[in-house]
Amino acid sequence: MICFNIIATFGGVRFMAEKLLPKHKQCFVIAPIGEEGSDTRKRSDQILEHIILPPLQQYGYEATRADQIDKPGMITSQVINRIIEDPLVIADLTDHNPNVFYELAIRHAAKLPVIQIIKKGQSLPFDISDSRTIFIDHHCLDSARDGRESLAAQIRAIEEDPEDIESPITTSIDLQRLRQSDNPEERTLADIVSDISEIKSALRSLKASGGNRSTLSDDICTDTSTNDAIRHLIMNDVERAVMKSELPEELRRDYWKFAVQKANRNPPFLAQSLDEFAKNWHPRNDDEKTS
Image (tube, one colour):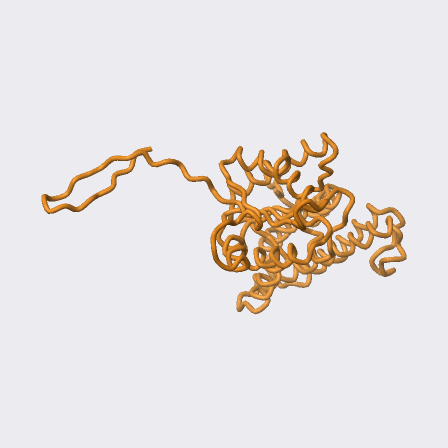
């Protein structure tokens, strides 16, 4: 790639052509670091080198962790600048380090792309349990390979659609805006999103209890199997959100499509249940499909 630098002289203007070297895209890595020589530092170094760097380099990114910033100045300000300025952030949530979650919240508030990873076998805090997260055991070769492939897939998805960003903060802000809207369609959409969120919360309770119906109220869960309980949740919650609106039938269909699309981010059986119920809820043409 050739660029031209214009240099002003008394004799007029002359052009100097020079080769412009491609610049790497920047990715800031949020991670527990620990003291040098500690087990935490060793794991963080291994995750960075063997899991994170290969897919980043594949897509032309340069990774930086907080301890690798060598510019003079306040390290906290520099970290925050990288968190809100870099086009990509990868956050390692292993061991629930408070600094990591503080920095992750900043990235969420900035409504910018972030990829979450965590040590296999550890749980996610409730507030971010819905966020897509890569679980990795770096001591297992298969898990390490799968982790690299999942990272590459998420990086590719972010590059294809960098505006498709969801986080607890942005979702709450968007819902508040919809609820306060003068447009009845947007207010109804907020109701549907809220009900889907309630379904996801019930699913978490169901998963935590192993499908035990005692964790759900009797008016919601009347079946003993997990799938039947989920289907009942969908039919009671999402249907109520759509039916209580006074929108035209055509708009209700659009909201059903939205509900199914949101469900695709959840376990397959939830998406299938929503899709099946959506198909039966309203008549549609043979060529009409939910996605």
